[in-house]
Image (cartoon, rainbow, N blue to C red):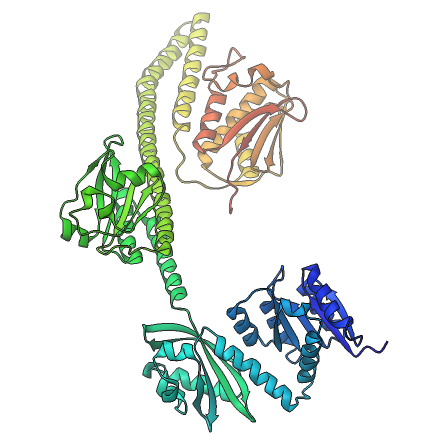
Length: 632
């Protein structure tokens, strides 16, 4: 069989490919149809196969038909492409034309067995091959005219007279939008009709670009019958009759979309202000100001729950509301629409509050949005006119309230943290005072006693004096440990990078280690208070030697989120592992029972965690986690 045309069918609906195949091959065996459901695979077919025409569905899974068409046009501007849609949409028709579709079909047309699809494809291929007949030019004009006449967007057809673009036709939406009769615009230069003075420079730039047969897309502002509006302008070069220097100027109104983007941008700015707010009152004031500017209503306010939730009290209001109403009243539980919204837990939108609430019957307020702000209070924005709020206003109010709730929660957390920090500061002061008392009031009489014992030992030889001397040494050690314990629990302020390999070895030299051995294993660099970290290592070393013997081996190594200190001694029984951190707990009669409590205090002051487990060789392993590594 002689195959004259190779057609690529792209559509993820199995019926679509069947319709294309049935519409072509059963009528005309000149066509070979290649099928794919994936537009990306379709691009590969175009790159590797000799495709004469693409028939693509608009409804595709990974991208719509317009995007697929634009992708093709970027690499294959002359390849005939027919777009098929199951939707009846002028917008799709317009976008297909602008994206460069050779032709457009409704899906129902594929069912036609009269050869319609065959004709459309052969015409498209011939036009793509530039064998354009008079009838085909007429077909193009008819197709273009249908788009021109049926588009809901304003379009004007222009032709260059020299370099001056002259209007040759306008559609009905153009007349309605810009207020010009076609008879008054046709034959006039474009810049005399729709281009305002402030955009003449931009118009000249676009004019040169279109004159050189380039398409143009840009955003412009134009005066319309509804005031100044924003449009997305697309200028597409076309052939008009036998003249190849024409273009369509296609205006799509984007005013509402631009306004939406602007308002959402303002909401984003409000979020940044909320982050910097230091009090609930400041958050309320910012929310009220934002509500006035974004919802464009002067009567905006925020009421907070007070008196254990029995009353709504005004906290913030716009200046306009203060000037109009003076001091705002508080509302007891159940009174008015504010309480109704709070109890409903959802945003309430009223076309006319006077018809809803007797309390508002004498107020110059009609339309209103009232929204609960978590369990904190109620936000409201009102208008002197009825039904002033639309669904988009409700959406904006919802976003603002969500931001406000988050900001109030953040302020609450910061205030709670400040209170906690103040309490910790007072606790640190008490601990410091206690440490001073211990250092001064106990150390001085202890020093006197030590001195007297030294004198007595020179005067006489008594075993009782030796016992007293050892007891005084014990007291001195207890005082040192008590001072360390008092200060180790204070919250760490400034930290610095500490290399545990270096610090752990320094601490080892500060302890009477006898024949014991210390080694490090990939010990990390962490952020910590080096002085207190030194006490931690020294106490863990003493604990290992005290319980593991003079020849114990101690290892300091790194964990995924911290470090560990372990020994190869006898270990600590499971049932005793929680008790070892208690103040005064010790299995050694000579021990103070403060060492591991000090370790735990130092860990907690850094906001770390400590676990006692069995070591790799059966000894005790202390794991410290939640540590911040330096540079992270």
